[in-house]
Image 1 (cartoon, rainbow, N blue to C red):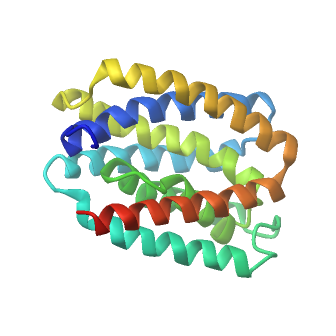
Image 2: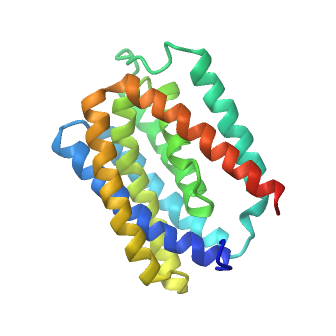
Length: 218
């Protein structure tokens, strides 16, 4: 966007990097057997559909108005996590069948948002899997990587069909995303849920501030 690239092209190109990064992270978590696959399957299918619908929508609407709304939501989410230290403790008492339906609902809604706009999608996904399904932050991260991959895949199909991907820039971004995702995933698996919680809060605040600044300079 800083170089005058159309919004839709910027979003489509970013999805190329996003799918590379989430694929790498998913493979890393899967190799460590840190993914809850039953939850992932329902969430990922719904997220794929959501990503398709969201990307289809953004090709017709300017998403700029979302910046302020999303930044406020991110601040609220991070405040809830910061002031509820027990949030993120694993809760094995949650009913498995309800978890599958809730995972599908999370995948569809956040997948749509990811396809439509994107920033902070992973933060929202992690928060919902922690707060609504009772996962700890590390387990939620593993589920979210695979779910986010599915939403990216759905979105990138739409953007590719519309010709709104700059593949040269996207490949360079994808290489960086692969390296960063592998390093970050290994660090999360090594450091555990408490570390992921702190990273979650830092990312939520950083994205919220960035979006607010962008909105103020429009």
